Image 1 (tube, rainbow, N blue to C red):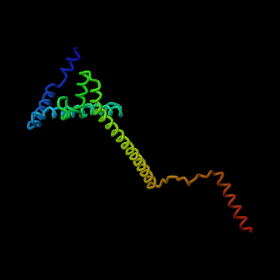
Image 2 (image 1 turned 45 degrees about the vertical axis):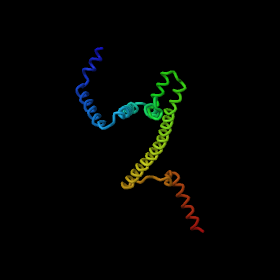
Image 3 (image 1 turned 90 degrees about the horizontal axis):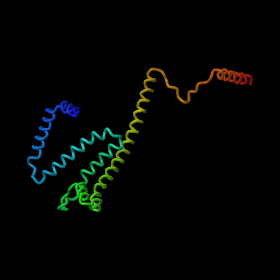
Image 4 (image 1 turned 90 degrees about the vertical axis):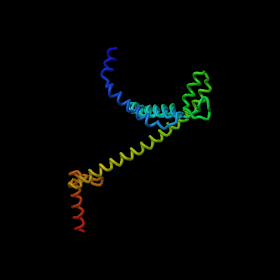
Length: 195
């Protein structure tokens, strides 16, 4: 337990309490004109936004597909729309209805209330999949353009310095073949002159 006490003593508790105090004052100013009946919804949405933003930090540490998928699962669980337990005309998070149905041992109700969560999850995963395809195509075309630009810059530098690049049509002829080619050329010119 000493390690826990050491951690607590090493924390800047004064700075943390000042930050929390400023957040509470800011929140009080934000919701001062909100009707009392709407305060739970504002508190819920504010908490969900904080949780999702903090989960982004965790999702960046996880491997690429798992981080995005875990964030989407959390988003679907927290924000999938459902109906309130007492009044079906009031929108509430579907996860609350699922938890309530499980506590009441109503498995068919839990499955029915889980449907909006699954719809939001599958739509979000599909949109994420399409986004990754578009992003991958864009990054590959950008990489090709960068490599072409680098190659063009290298060719321009070589042309400017007079160090020309060999092309495919420029073939190096071995010295032995040059001598035989010269002899053939001389023979052909001698035979033309004799004719």
